[in-house]
Image (cartoon, rainbow, N blue to C red; front, side, top):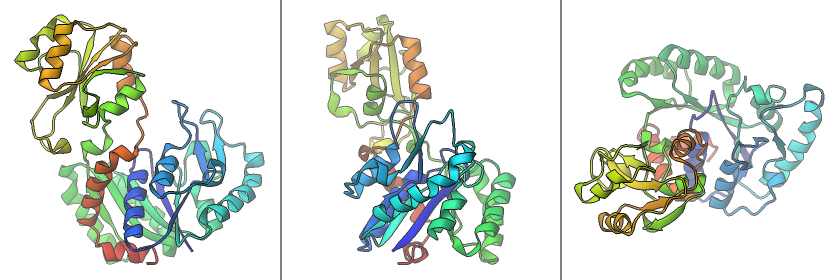
Length: 349
């Protein structure tokens, strides 16, 4: 049984996407895969470890949450240093149960391998040593100098425990200068250095996710809920001429997509994906008919327009099984950088 620790150097680095893609590769290699997270944070929407729930569902793992994630903490309180050590035996026991019968267990780390303030008394490095795990480090690109310094320092610290480093969300203009430094790192033996371009598709929610966040109700075309939403606006300018009636509907938010290859539909920029009717209003029949004819879902929400926009812009949207296309997109970009055989070998396969 091989533990694989997936850690990062900051928030929104892509840990869950990488774990999901790696799990699928390992399953394809006929390996049984487990999932574990030593410490979880209660999210502001009340969800407990949606990343663990997602991967457990994908891997058909039916174990209690307290085994898959034995320690849940409140982000506002962190971990009391006086009792931190006492948690280690609980975590080690739970890991033994979660990994039983598994060829490989993927362990999800915190947001920062060293300095996560919520977990400062129990950083990832403690669990890496405790479980004798190999480590994949996922870094969210901030700047060339900061990224390179951070990952090289961590590579030096982890030494032989490091299975590979992935630098994610790199702006296209930064790729070439970063690659020059990565080539130097590879030359001195830093393993599996890969860079993934910033991809807005991977970080944006579907219509369904927004409806759930707002406790909304579809008035028509719920089957369109898997469309991706890249931005929202109060303007009617993006709506087609046949939907001009919505210029007279003031309590609304228009949800837009704008990349030609977003879910491979190809309409081009500022494509209207859905319309939220806010403040509990009910649109006139003519507006509902216009939306149906144009293939644009209408959603009723009780929140007012400004509050709806605030929720959309700040809600902690989580990956779900419906986001498999995002995982596939990420995996494709990853395997363009790293040979699958080498990636699996780094996992001991």
